[in-house]
Length: 161
Image (cartoon, rainbow, N blue to C red; front, side, top):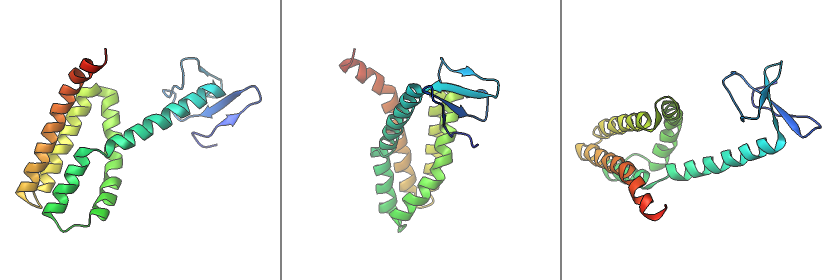
């Protein structure tokens, strides 16, 4: 069996084999003797729905005005193919996104923001190799994102109580 496969039993439960014991599926889950987590089918269905909704939300949020700004900077200051730049950039970004999530899990929002600021600075340093103006534009985009993260909770409180 591989990690992540579901084995359904007849009593509306399923067993999810896992690799590490710190993996916890639900508060109502229990550890069986053979180191598997057993949850009800409805819990798995809910977790799958939450995962799907959160994943779609994150994917739509990753494609954001900041991304459009970076595409504009690249198009304006280089002859690189935007298609291949997006393809290779996406492949390079996957482990960075996962690393940011791990930093968030360990250090919270401020740790994740610090990591993201570091990647923005690195992005600006790389972009300055295309042109100094591209590097400056990249850092300005990053500064506005940082300001937005600080201001967003206050603006949200004006509309939602």
